[in-house]
Image 1 (tube, rainbow, N blue to C red):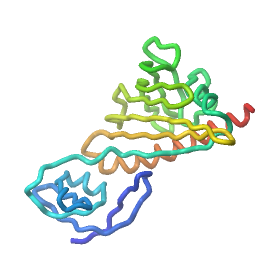
Image 2 (image 1 turned 120 degrees about the horizontal axis):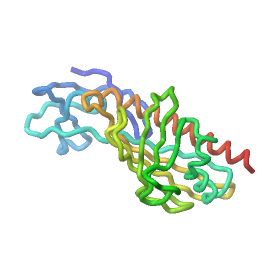
Image 3 (image 1 turned 120 degrees about the vertical axis):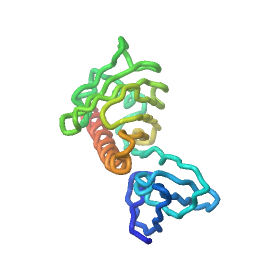
Image 4 (image 1 turned 90 degrees about the horizontal axis):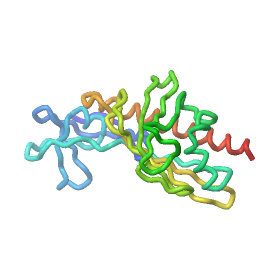
Length: 216
């Protein structure tokens, strides 16, 4: 049977395609570009991925990949200044459009490798609080975090933000990956959460750039 499906590109964009659907013992076969790389994955994940399906029972089940996105934003000042403001939790709520609370946790008083922080979303985003630990912290260059708690809808979350100076200021590039929970609903949660997170990340970086412009 041939049906229209959606495939999500690397930045979450929707690509409408047509693929063949064939159930095999409760699973659907994901057929990558190389026919020798066939894998059976649960039907809900297969439908969410929107790629080629073909029957072959001589393969093993596997899970879908982590949704991810990359968002870049030009900044009006150098990387060091952007980095310092971004990781200054005493000023975080002055510009962050997503959060209602942002603070360091577990006794930490400054952002650094190994430090932990809690960021809680505004009511519109369900007041979800994600606690993360800095796994990379290079001032003016790059910082990366991993989720250490288990908030609603998130099984895992990792993100990084990298800075590069330009002639007129700098560019901040934010990348994130996540896995939703419960697993049975990932087929619908992944595309929705990816869209929301990518949109809100873009808005946050634009707000950061505007705030820095007003400080000049």
